[in-house]
Length: 358
Image (spheres, rainbow, N blue to C red):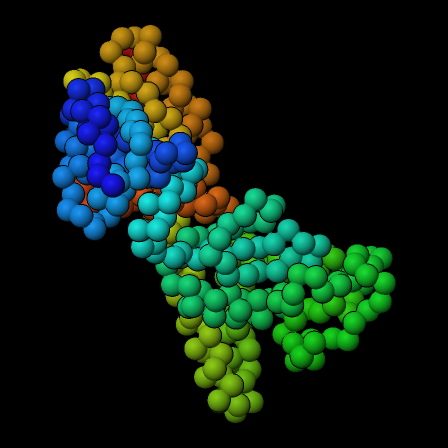
C-alpha cells in the first residue's frame, strides 16, 4: 500500500512552515502518531519520501488523515506534543519510543501507611516523591528508610491493628513477622504501636523525603556509635554504609529541591510572526501562558497572573502526578540543552518591578 497522494497534496496546499504539532490518524480515526516541528509543512511532507520499511514509511502507509495546530514557538510545541502523547498514547509513539524509566517514592494512603519504591503514579490518594533515575538503588534505600523508622513493608492486604484502636481489617490478629521479632518494624500487624506512634514515624519519613529531617540519620549514627562501643565492629560498619547511602539520598533530595527553586521564573519566548509569549513557570511546571503585554491593560493582566501563580510559592518537593513529573523533566532538559534561553528568564519580582503596569 502506497502513501495517499491526495493526502500529500492536502498537506502541500494547506500546511505552512510554522512551529506546531501534527497528528496522524488511521482508517478507523484512531490516533496513530503525534509529532512537533518548527516547520510543520516540511516535516510532514518528509514522511511521504521515507524509504520503504522505515518507521515513517510504515506510519504514512496507515495514515488516512493528518491534522495540525500551529504553536507560537518550539518550546510550547514540545510541551503540547508531550501532553497529547500522555493523553492518547498513540501506537507509533509508544511502540517506537525507548522510554527511560524513573522511580518514585510512594507513601501509601492506608491506615498503616507504607513507604514503597514505584515506577508508576496512580490517582490513589498516596503521596509521591521524585522522580529519581536509578530504580534499583532507590528500592534499596527505601527499604533501609522503612527499617530505620520501623515502617511496615508487608503486603497492603495484611490486617493491621493499633494498640489504641479497634481492629481495622479482619477479625483476628496474625503472628508478628521476622522484622517485628528483630525490632525493625513497629509491627501494626500484631497491634504493638498506637496510631499516634506509627503515624509519627510516617510523618518523619515524609519530612525526610522533603529534605527537612535529619532524625533517621541521627538514629543510625547513635546505633553505630553504640555498636562500636560494644566492639561490634562488623555491625557498626554495616550501619556506617547505610548512613552513607541515606545521606547521599538526602543530598539528592536537597538538590532536587534546589532544582525546583531554580525552575521558577517568568520566561519570554519570541514567537512566529511576532507572536511573543510569556510562560509563568513554577517549580518546573508551566502554570500560565500569556501573550507578551504591549499595553497597560495587558501588563496589568500579566501582573495579576504573576501574583496568583507565585503568591504562595511552596518550594518543597511534595507530591507529583505522572504528567507533572514528565513536564518538569522536559522543562529542565530544555534549559539544560539550550542554556542561552536562561537569558530570557527573569524572577517574578524583577518582572513586576521592570515591566509591571506603570
